[in-house]
Length: 122
Image (cartoon, rainbow, N blue to C red; front, top):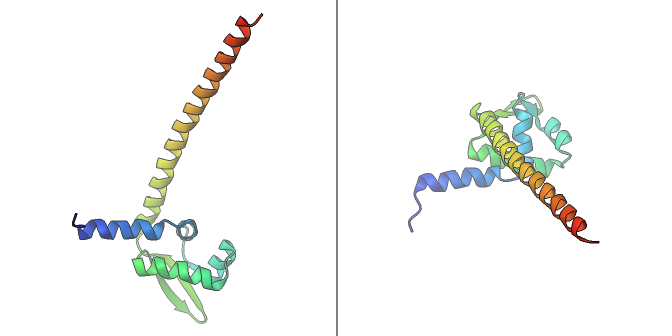
């Protein structure tokens, strides 16, 4: 099967976004630009790890940077990234709510089954 370039590009986007540290970087940048040092401290990563994640996001075109003196500042290139993060949170919240409801039903059924068994045992 031939891969459509659009699907390949979308898969690449999700692949790069598919790392917890990169998601955390994006969430930190939703509130505004930050220096590499600020991000490194917040993420509790060394400079090499932080730089690798920032480079992957920058190459994808999700982030942009600027230099001011000795500091490099990063910010979201497209404000819709914050919308993407918000929608992902909504989807996960909904899925977890559904799972929580299912878990509640299972617990209730288990309790009822235990009660019935204890009612029939002399």
